[in-house]
Image (cartoon, rainbow, N blue to C red; front, top):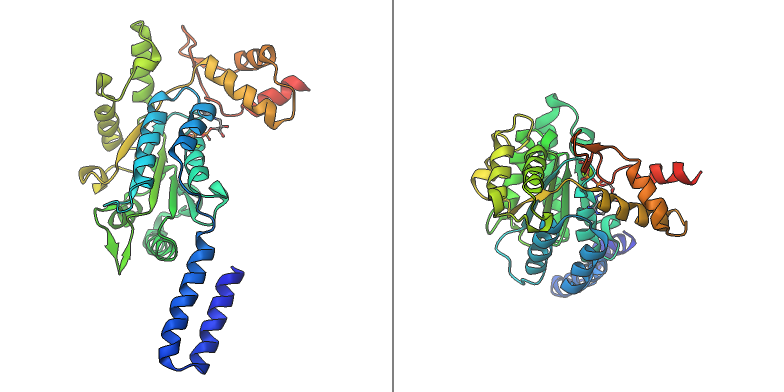
Amino acid sequence: MKVRHFVIVLLLVSNITFSSGFLDVFVAAASVVYTYFERDDLLPFDSKRLEEDLRENFFGQHIASNVIRRAVSSFMTDSKPNKPLALSFHGTSGTGKNHAAKIIARNVYEKGEDSKHVHTFISEHHFPHKQKLDLYSAQLKQWIHESVSRFPRSMFIFDEMDKMHPQLIDAIKPFLDYNARVDGVSFRKAIFVFLSNAGGDVITGVTLDFWREGNIRENLWMDSKELEIKISQNIFNDKNSGFLHSNIIDEHLVDHYIPFLPLELKHVRQCVMVEMVHLNVTQDSDLADEVARDMPYFPKEERIYAVKGCKSVRQKLAQHID
Ligand SMILES: Nc1ncnc2c1ncn2[C@@H]1O[C@H](COP(=O)(O)OP(=O)(O)OP(=O)(O)O)[C@@H](O)[C@H]1O
Ligand SMILES: [Mg+2]
């Protein structure tokens, strides 16, 4: 921020002091300085680092892990992408949608999710009043436009996408398009991530059927059981999905609809082990097992999937330590 102020002050002073020829050179130099400081938050992209991060910190999500790794890596290493990257994460609660968005952020920006270039919108928090939709829509467009014009590699996370009004989704649409250029600004380097529970039940159903048929979870892929088609049809037809009536699906502006599978006991156990590190307690696999078993599971008969995924694992662990 200080740098920005410094450059603005210099520009103002120069405007008064210098001749216009000199001013052009000065403006160019100032812009280089400004871009340099704005860039310092961008990490040199390393696909191996992303792969490792996903392998070590993202549990039970082999499909999401694979699609995210491939999509983010090819996008980040493409010097001229023809559209921004748009990923849509779907799954029930606590399966790691926000967690995966954070993993992407920390592989793109030095400050990860805390970078000023990562913008998170939560539907019910940022856009609570239906009667203000016109205002929200204008503000959202302006925010995205200004952020990307300042820093092309900006990231936008839309949480609770299923609660987002179609009018707001349509406001984002022009930015997602192929060769998108809005008022002279190109959006091709931006990253959009949509998070929602829409499609979660379909994903759970498919995963459960697959398990009941005696298959190994890791053999479930997007093309098996037409998972991707089922997800997009489901979210498109779901009354509770913000995507309903939005042209985003029709126009194929989302690059990947990514299923987050319901988590099993063994994944929850892995989450408990991670939380032990966060709480500064010695990792203990017996205790991890005990805590994981203390979480609720469904369906009633088989009790195979964690009702809350890895959510509130930390709180549960804290109870066990007390
Ligand atoms: N697949 C996972 N691998 C590792 N940790 C996970 C995973 N899923 C969840 N977690 C842990 O649980 C916490 C809660 O998960 P997260 O907020 O990502 O869930 P979510 O899918 O966004 O849920 P919701 O739909 O309720 O918003 C994360 O911060 C992370 O610590
Ligand atoms: Mg979430």
